[in-house]
Image 1 (cartoon, helix red, strand yellow):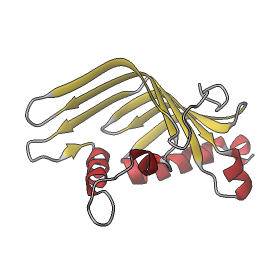
Image 2 (cartoon, one colour; image 1 turned 90 degrees about the horizontal axis):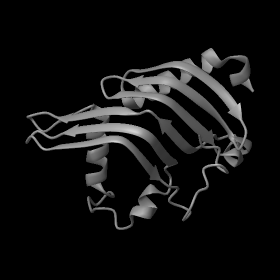
Image 3 (tube, helix red, strand yellow; image 1 turned 30 degrees about the horizontal axis):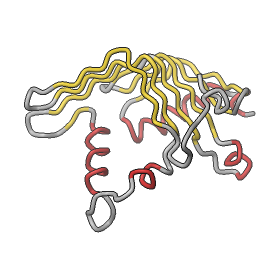
Image 4 (tube, rainbow, N blue to C red; image 1 turned 90 degrees about the vertical axis):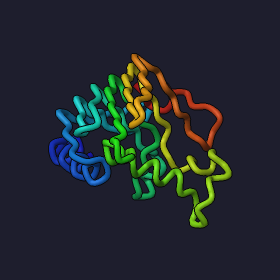
Length: 169
């Protein structure tokens, strides 16, 4: 409800929270929506220096809202343009990618790799990318380029997700 009354305040709060984890984030617009779920639509989102997205829909878990601890259930991204580069010293730009790779390699406290990918991903929201352009350049000259890609990383706790029922785009 407060997002309907103060979308600018919510936009600034999301920018600040996202910037803590991702680096500088700018969001041109925010619109709350209520339909097949409760969420927000973000437009023209840029994370410097990683890239930008035309639109991002974030769907919240209704049950978590009722409990007073909002949890993201699904993220739908349209028009993502992402660029990642490994420098000659082995570090990655953007730094978020370096943190994610370090975390993935660390596994659990013992340093072992995760035994069950499904369990590892269980707390993450479902993610859908539509019209994504992704460029990854390694320090040794190898490259990965995806153009106009459609990628879906489903909710690990279930075998399927119907995007219409989850409030997707």
